[in-house]
Image (tube, rainbow, N blue to C red; front, side):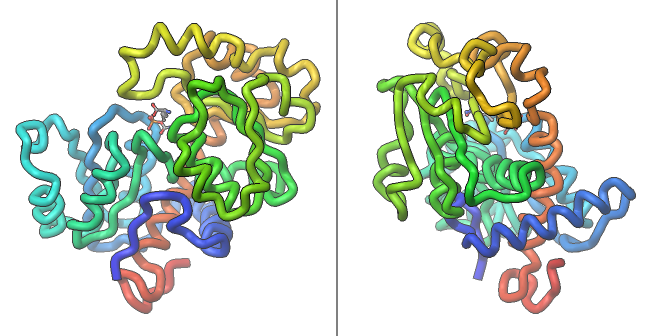
Length: 313
Ligand code: CP
Ligand code: NVA
């Protein structure tokens, strides 16, 4: 049976920890320039409807370093831009390659694509979720803090795709997540409604409320891809949610600042914070590679999945 990764809860908690163990190994191997053949003879397409620096590079490299072959497709350069249906595109791509990584707008369309595709589909960001980002971010937190479950994470800013996946992931792993957003831009209602454990999530619109005891302070852009026409309105509403030194005055000494990047310096975060001693944003970006390698190895060579019986470790 094909195994898709469309949202963070498509993995079980124990699978996530297993992926982290393998990630540590991939990170070590990378330093020694040693690559593996988990994706030997497998071709994986990347179909992107939106721009990308980190996700594209890290996935392309991950596939190459696992012995597979990546094919990058911008939707603009395919017949999708001339209206070819999702169903036909999914069916045809499935005849050529062994897996597909998609960055698009609508989560519903991604799910429809996955329904028609005969190969594993990985979500590389939709308007609703950014699960690979959050999976890799949990690895980075685990690497730095050595634990996950007793931490307190504060997300401040727009209740967007990154925030939705963070909430879903914290629910899955049992981590306390506090979300601070303006009333107009709260996380998606479906995400809140579907929480398994309602107690993991606290919500506020007071930017100072969850700073003092936070182990992690996370923010993201106020204007996500596809929202540029709302830019002016958003910038006004979000002003008091900027992560700056003033906001962080009472933060713990050892809190970690996180941002999925790209950052809009001077908007959601100041240079002092993102370049400061508590910031781990470049470690986050680096770990995208190591952790996505582990995810791919898991999805494509886990015993019982596409490559039955093969060891994925
Ligand atoms: N964080 C992230 O997904 O970055 P890119 O848009 O550059 O891929
Ligand atoms: N929320 C951002 C994340 C970019 C990686 C966006 O969707 O543009």
